[in-house]
Structure formats: C-alpha cells, structure tokens
Image (cartoon, rainbow, N blue to C red; front, side, top):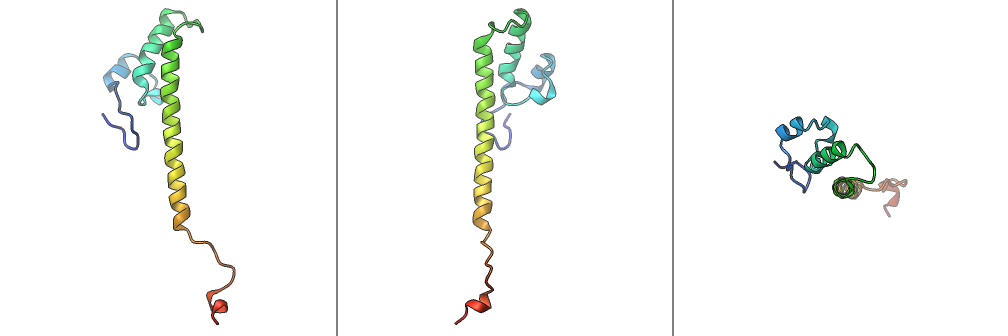
Length: 97
C-alpha cells in the first residue's frame, strides 16, 4: 500500500493495526515498527531502559517522515516564491522614457 506524497510504503495492514490496537493518529508508515514496540513495552512493564532498539528504530522512522514533509513543504514554498513577481512601487508608465 502506497501513501500519496511519501517515499515510504505502508507495511502494516489496516487489520494488523486494528488487532494491535494502534491509535488512529499513529497509523502511519511507521506503524509496522510501533506494533512490536508496544508489545515489548507491555511485556517489559514499560521500563524505560527496555525496548531501546525498537524505540530507536520507531523514532528514527518518524523523524525521517517529518524531515521528508519539511523538505517537500520547503520545495512548495520555493516554487510559490518563483511564481510571485516582486511588487513594483513605481508604475510602468513612469519608467517609460
């Protein structure tokens, strides 16, 4: 399953996310990493020094998604800036010789 506007594909299916009770706001391209992380957290009683590798891989995935969105927005802003012409304070008729 491909998500429009992203280079990452959805790996976890909707059924897997429902079964793992992943909250709707967290059902993104990194959900396949969140499912084992949450299972590990529950098994280890949410001890902060446990499940570090799972947490790191999930947070890295989320960071990459954010950076991808930021770069895309920056490109959109640059394109819009190119389309806009600077506003001239002097009318064109005054520039005529």
